[in-house]
Image (cartoon, rainbow, N blue to C red; front, side, top):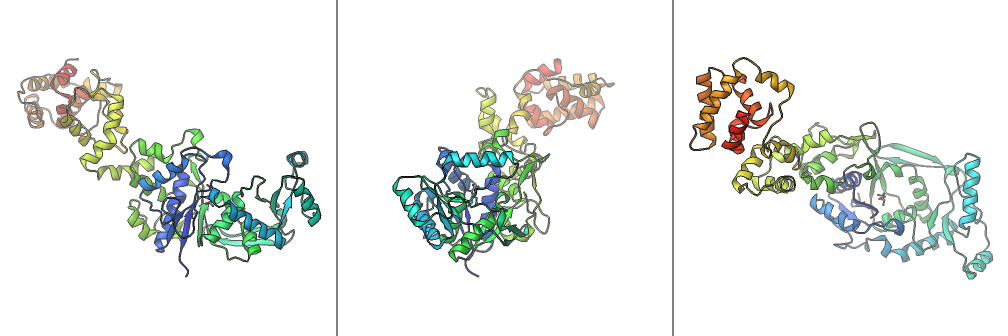
Length: 475
Ligand code: GLU
């Protein structure tokens, strides 16, 4: 088999969302499971939708995720340039070849004429399709119009009968009646190609063997195949990926406030966790395991196991996966993704580095992403705790007041405030108040933290500090 080459071809029209990154990952995996090349191509031919900074965003995201680009705008390669706006001459050249061979034609129809056609289609309640008005212009007519500076586009001449089929590796056989295909624009009047044209030229010239992309291109792929045919080129293998939807079936979108990769990253999700989770969106390994590194993924990945039903983006699952990676962090790494969030939300000026370290480390197994540290540690940054009904019921039980009073005396008598002495105070309370288990720990935890669950009680009390603990016991 020839060398496997895949490409990630984002348009810099916005900030890389989760779906884009999932495509990049699958493209990377298809290449790497076959020891192939992963190419980055920037598809910036729609200049009206260009977003400043989006290209840098793409580079940064791939880099943070360890998805290494073998060829692309930054590192070059043998098939450059890798940015479409730098390849305009190529598209012109190939569009003209198609005109010469009769597979494409000049179209001079102006916006007004096209608008009228659209209106007519709307009134007749049929889908709009260009009517082929310019497809039989003579050479002389064309020359005349060009001489008069009339604007033109180049359109693909679609066959009016027959069918076009291909085999998608995920969706199986796809067939379209050619009469349903519009004579689509290949080259716009500003000299820029459309996606529909550029993707074919570039995938061919860059020797892409497998095209991996979202399934929104599933039904337009026959048009591209007709272009390959017109040029006499071999087409690549197609792998269309299922949509990512939210629970309820809606498409993920930034506009609805759905997170981009960077949003997640800035909230203290780990790139390894995000990548691991994204791999599960539309794919699962044969052994049903769910936690794997990028390395392991490369070994496990198999295109045949890509599922064609919509993949549901489930934040709970993402957190569950990410929590696995949080647990593996060193204390330094953990501090890095949590302290900025604490700083942003609380006054840390009186806290020592030691204290912060201890705080963050007792919560390592309790958070699933960095920013979550803020809500779970709230009890350390306020004086009063709020006791809910369920907690109050426990505090109302017989003997609890006595237990808490005994515990308070034990706490007051501690001279050296550390986890051991606090542990001792709890043990002494057990002896003196004659309570154990839940009836010992629960009232103390509720009264001092306002919660029924949390990290180890002695550590928590240690971090709260003697004064605050006594204040809360007195309350
Ligand atoms: N530029 C296209 C997009 O961002 C790429 C589609 C493809 O991978 O061919 O949707």
